[in-house]
Image 1 (cartoon, rainbow, N blue to C red):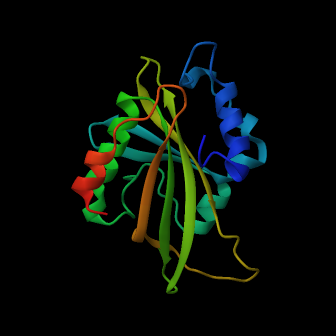
Image 2 (tube, rainbow, N blue to C red):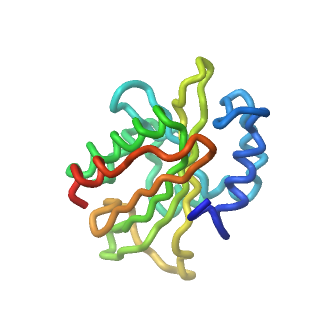
Length: 184
């Protein structure tokens, strides 16, 4: 599985352990967050509440510290430039329709005129009715230097924004139309 290497393998392995035999995507009732151990500090949980309504549900302590904000309950795309919203919504819709993971790479811009590179792996979770409605992101990026003060996060993806599908057993959706429409 491309991109599910090195730093992402432990996260993927824990997520995969939540799946019952024959399941591609685990049910929320089978997820035991504490099994992520130290990785949990780098996890962001996003919940789908309706069409185009994705909100932060949980942020690990390291994610929260780096963001300098606590956006739980707020729009998941609040930091993403508006011109990328439609592309990102369509991506999440693809994951819901054909279960897959997604690897992201993007820039993060902070108040103190600092930009950093960021990677994440997005893994889906099925809700109580069997639909995919929750997404777990394992976030990896730079390690702040001692005393480094970036200030709060201002935007994500303004300089560069990449999403690639990762097969979890159902193949990967055709994303060429998304890329063409987004003109990234």
